[in-house]
Structures are given as structure tokens and as C-alpha cells.
Image (cartoon, rainbow, N blue to C red; front, side, top):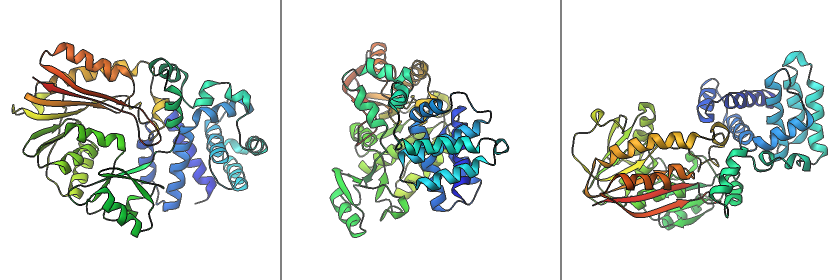
Length: 417
């Protein structure tokens, strides 16, 4: 398939996300429509993720050169995709321009081929750098919606700039080494034998210097390693499962934390998820690890659908959130979320946490976990819960902010006394 056709496909993905669709869902649909080669699919993914990661900058430049919206939205999306290639990748410039112009000939009867050509060649003349006038717009400069930037300034006055910068970096590929098989140091030696450069980042974690497909990872299919962000790996470690305990993973999909708990101890684990299709991913993960667990598709907030009355020693309450901490990995999130979404989600969390707390035995514990950095879903939610439950005692609280090594996560470990 020609680059021009791939650009058009990425432009269509961009438009669907701009209309409110989830990027991963759109890409899943696209992948099923055609027999992509690995190189073609890699390019589609790069253009789709990159155009969302730098959407603010790209839109700012587009409006500078094309002040009025074009009559065919796909033309603007095509420009966005091609500008991303010129400004943020190592793609051959002449190929990007020529293929985009050729693709434009198939839209709006080819009336805007000259415009597409002129804008892209202007990008090259300006050495693929954003003019100062564009960077005067905060959304173009930081690639976040203005309301989000203002929130970060208010919530993290000393760290907001680092959070924004880190969120624009490509996510690192971090692996969790199954302690039942070997240590991180031992797996590092295995990687070296396959000429894969990596470094140890924890007793059971390694980070690759360059991302690769899991099919290239030695012993992945045998369950020796799993892909999991370093910040996400802290959940099971903080919950600290002990052999013989009965544990609930209340919102388990896609199963990374579920698998980690099972690796740490021989426990009786029930994994719930409201989405049966997503629960299948949990099943696939633990099957690869060859570790036992009970899986059930159910809403954790509705006890009559799954709870047998036997309380748990520990509950992982990885509750729904805005996912504001993982925009590095899911850059569409920052454009899909709205200013009041955190408050709306917090109300959902409130109900679920109260229900789950009733399933924790006295002397047991619950780990409140989110992949958010918004206080409404984290510290404020914790304080509200502690005020509602006299038998709840906070043992520890930790807010991990996005950086070059991890995504953003929040954890609060609560004991039932």
C-alpha cells in the first residue's frame, strides 16, 4: 500500500477521534478491515498516535497557514498527518509531500492539491519548526487543552511543566519479570543474548532502550515476562499479597495487575470486570502465566451480581477514572476529556468504594488505585471515604507523577480496623 493511502487512512482515524471516538477502539476497527503488513501497520499507528500527541501544535500551525476551515474535513486531517511526519519524524520529506499531494487529488475533486503542496513545502522551508506566533498559544506550545494546563498549574505549581513535558514523550517499554521464574538481573542476561539492550529498574523489572514487539521478547509466551509500566507495577507490590489470602481484583482488565498479584503469592483470587470482552484479555494474560484465578464478568458496584458473602483479606480497587496520568501512552485522552469529567467520575468511584469496603474483612486492607493525577479522583476521594467509614485507617498514600520512566498513578492503602 502506498504512503498516500496510509496517510488517508490515518487522516480518517484522526477525524474519528476528533469526533469523540477512542483511539484504541478506532485502530482496532481499522486493523480488522485490511491485511496490513507489519510495516504498514506500524506506520498507521505512528501517524495516529503522533497526530494526537502533537495535536495542539499541528492545529496551531494549520490555522496559521489556512485560517479558514477547508470544505472537506479529511483534507485538514491529511495536512495534520503529513505535518506530523515532517515536524516530528525522520520520514523522507519529498516522499511525505508528494504522497500527501497525490492523496489530496482524491479529495474534493483535487481542488486543493496546490494548497496542500504549498503548506507542506512551507513547513520544510521553516525547517520543520513552529513559528513563534504559533508557540504564543499555550495549546500549541504544550499540546494540552488550555483548561488542562490551568488545572496542572493549580494542582502542581512546582511540577506542572515537568508533567506536561513528560506526557509528550513516547512511553518506555518496561517489563515485569515473573519472580517465579527468574530475577530481573537474570532476564537482563537473556536479553543480552538476543542483542536487546535494556537496564534493570527494580528487583523484578527491566526497561528496554528501544521498544519492540512482544514477539521479539525471549520467553514471553512462556510467561517469564509481561509488559507493564513501572508505575503500574507498584499496585501489586503495595497490596503485598500473602500466600493463602483471599483477594479481589475489582476492575481487573486488561489483567496486568491481576497477573502480578498471582506471581507474588499463592492466593485465592477473584478477578471482576464489567466488560466480558475486556475480561477475556485477563483470561489470556493469566493463561500465558499459567497461574490460576477465578474470573467473572460483573459490575463490582452491584454485590448481588457476584458476591457470595465471604469477605476478602485484600481488595484491589483499581476504580474507573479519567486516565489523566497515562496520556503519554494514550494521547487522545487529553483531547477527549472535558473540564468536569473528574467530578463526574468521582461520584461513580464514591459508590463503588463504599460497596467494595463492605467486602473487606476486619484486619484486611484495600488499595485504592487510579491512573489519574486529578485530586478529585485521588486525595479528595480518599479523604471523603475516610470520613464516611470510621473503621478505615490510612496506612500510606502515594501520587506518582508522569516522568520519563513511568506514567502517572495514585495509590492509597487503607486498613480495616
